[in-house]
Image (cartoon, rainbow, N blue to C red; front, side):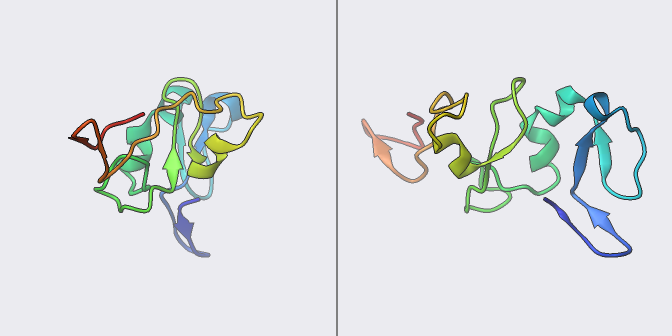
Length: 103
């Protein structure tokens, strides 16, 4: 996730609380709380469901304060502990006459 080359890594993160590792040759260590907060990733340019500042492909989703980011389709897999527990934004659609309504 994120991007990088042999000399530069950007927009990549790891959990310093669970790994016990505070330094790395690349990326940025974040606390578990930061890793479970959408803005950590949207501030770095990750394209999340329901936001358009970083694109409209809706690649990522997160159940804030409970889980790490996942790919949008992972929430649809049966057996996922968060199966359909997160509202799915309906961007550009109309539900009861309200644009951007979440189900």
